[in-house]
Length: 294
Length: 276
Image 1: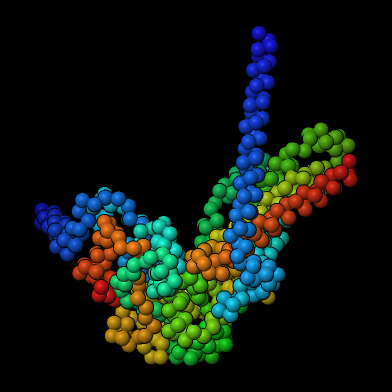
Image 2 (image 1 turned 120 degrees about the vertical axis):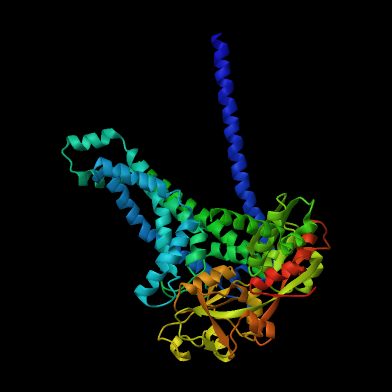
């Protein structure tokens, strides 16, 4: 009887293991096949216009230039600025909710942040056009207001909730014993934050940053609606730019056989590799530093 | 008094349903059911919506879905069989016609007019000034008699039929600055220009209304009348394309666009009905 139960449990373990394995394999294969698909469809483009030209040239289809370099710059500018704005804000917010605010306020803020993760990006874009863009235009009295700055501000708003929630989770995962030990030694709140919580939550902070980066890199709607989509190389934060994702959305309607259309795949490949390299390198850095520590 | 009011309401109700203009032309749809999918050019949408509404009200078994996407998307999607009718604000190229076996139905003419913000003092430009503004050579409204502010140029994406016609007929194929902001539909263009006091852009004449100011080009204001009389020359045909000759719902829908009540709707939406 006992053996039967044992066997049953074992079967269950084996069954669920193969189920999860299958799910993983399918997920990985799907991701890889998307990449293969993009390379396959983008290949005709690379044979005519070599990859380096594509990566360094300007975009001027009238003159036979199909480079996506301005869009890479635009993406870089918007994503990094939005992270620069959102990271300190999110970290501060998470610390406030976790450590500083009275319990009622903290719970309220936590709920608000949770709710914010569910707001569709198109709503942010919409509010941006009617509210933020005119403000930016009047404040700086230069340009159209549809620019890197406006898009980055909105994008920061979009990615902050994700970061805050991941930070909060990692704060909460810090062993209570560590905190109690510090309290027993008479540590202040500041010491608690600087010497226990932040170092302990480093993995979580990096994870949150990565997730936010991925979300910012992949967002299409905000850039499409608010950044202006100009094809020129940006020179200031008040210049209008086109991101790689917005370029895909805009050129999607072009003739299927045109070179313009094929640049979509180049953009896709660049975005794909960009995310992959960033994720892998940060993981590597993190893994190394963890090894050093131990 | 109340009785009269009720009677009047009933009468007008009956008139509405019995009005021969509305009931007769949709007769071709009698007994037909199913879904008709339309996509593409955004200049077509006001007419498409109105026609679809009338047909679906008279024949509840018919469903008509209308999407935008621009001329390029319309041609591509109908060619690949994703939709039944693909609209385009330009004539599909010979290559496209041949590759997809398209049949073209040009049911209206449409002007493409330059627009600026309502409060802009500049409401007339010459072709030369317009070309200089769009190429980025003229950068300040002051240079054409406006306020001392930088000009924000709006344009459409490369697949847009409106852009193609504007570029060919108003800009004489001169370059459009790469600093221009790019939007993806006539509606987005109007929204962008109406919310930016220093903007200039261009839309289908069917989209002109009080939210923006139409700019006279070489002395001629773009409007239904000037397009009709042939005075305003930045004009293009609006096409509904099908893959091969189609029958059933698709044919009935296109026939409706050429019927008297179809033409009436087209004119009401600020376009000029074309003969078959």
